[in-house]
Amino acid sequence: MEEVVVAGGGVIGLSCAWRAAQAGHRVTLWDPAPTAGSSWVAGGMLAPVTEAWPGEEALLELGLESVARWPDFAAELAAAGRDPGLQTAGTVVAATGTGDRAELDALADHLARLGRSVDRLTGRELRRLEPALGPDVRGGLSVPADLSVDNRTLLDALRVAAEKAGVVVEDRAYAGEPAETLLICAGAHSAALHPALAGLVRPVKGEILRLAHRRGAFPVPGRTIRALVDGRPVYLVPRPDGLVVGATQSEQGFDTEPTVGGVRDLLRDAERIVPGIAEYGLTEVAAGLRPGSPDNVPLIGRLDERTIVATGHSRNGILLAPLTAELVVGALRGEPVPAAVEPGRFGRTT
Image (cartoon, rainbow, N blue to C red):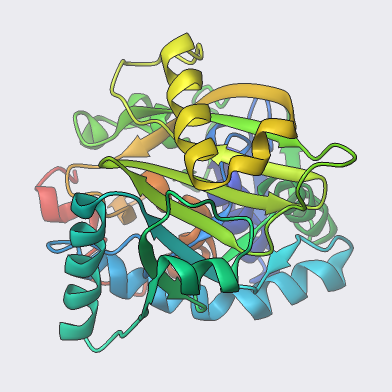
């Protein structure tokens, strides 16, 4: 089997390195801070249905394929040494005002046309399902098939599994070292590693908060909560000791400094949905860079005879990790990838 050098040690790079090593390849992964980057600053939602919007049908199908792989993917990681913390309680999507409810109704109608029905609930019904929701919630959806995972535990589990499979991790940036095959998984920084990616991968900044449950505070919700608050999206993802709240979205180059306005908006909107978080502790404020693509669909496949790419996953990197790794291993064998993710769809391969 050939030698594979993986540039990038986030969830995509580690997943691909692990699977490539399992397939018999000699794999070296290069990253100055493996298990960090945008994968570290994430909510860990596995939410193809609640991320679905008109015009992104290809992305929905990819997400549904990948989320179906997640239980086995997580179980295999656990067997390799570390449980990644897959949560299967599902997701609720809450709306506040009339406009928010109309937008969620439009999403439900869109999904129904695609044969993907969701349960529409009143505010009272949602509160029976998830008592943490506050009185500003006027209605929404229940989506039991949308899951979540502890992104930081997942990264640790992937590194353990990858190294056990034979992956050599170099804690420094890839700098053009020769390889039979180079696999570019460097997220928002991928465009600097191959001319065909110029203009196709861009950084999209997202700020998140971590809240710690304190004694006497309202219990941590049992499900992932997504919401629209006067048109602004916000999510709250449970962790054993609290919540991850996110995420803002802006395009400001490679700026990773959290802003006062971003923190203010996230706390204000999250508290309207789950008032009990006012008694939680604010333990972390962070910002990461999602790797955006022109159509929000990742770029996976060959760029040239010695280069494969897996990047541009935007907000769906963790969700699409199992499927991406499977497609990359197929590409290493010379198999075609789905047209929806083929990098050549933009006419830039060399």
